[in-house]
Length: 282
Image (cartoon, rainbow, N blue to C red; front, side):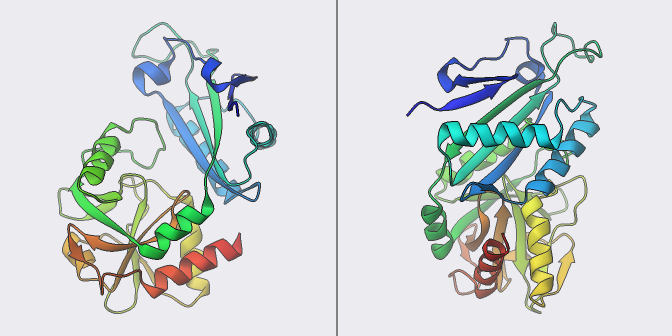
């Protein structure tokens, strides 16, 4: 089946969807992106993702080219054309096409808007969560504004590749003080010995995960205490549970960190309960 993409107002077969060689997203990573999970044809945590999209554009001073209604109409048509009921929608917006120069181009430069959609098997994701995953740790070598969801992801790519080569599913990034910031594409959580859920505070060092925020609310509703603070690799390795959250993994247990089992080395009951609560709430 032909996959379709949306590029600057046109729906095109994906192998015919092109951007200009002087697009600033291509040359400078001068672009932001957003990802929505789709279950049964619905966007999960839709408003949270739209809010983060708008914030990222504002932080980079890129004009928002559409309203939320406009984005929803394009997404709905893209899902229809690609016959996606369960999967992902990817949106990327760059500052647009302009002669290569580090400074911003003229104010009337039109942003480039690209969207794609693909199918995913939710049962496969559920099976992965049932078994849990391993993570390794890597130095956090990213820039100082990780709270903006830009396409400047090379350090994340290198960390993820290191994880895969080590037989792990994710890399947790560690700052100069020895504290975990987040994963290469996920937020990091632990359940400490006192039964408190701990996740890094939403500062400039991490992406402010939309799924993370929803899980915080679900955890509070279930009676768990949540602390937003940094934690060390050693604290994570000695925790009762560890897990990661994102729009694609939802809540997935981490069973080992750098080869050392977390808890009994099996998916934790709290992570399992939070995943179920998240999916039920949506």
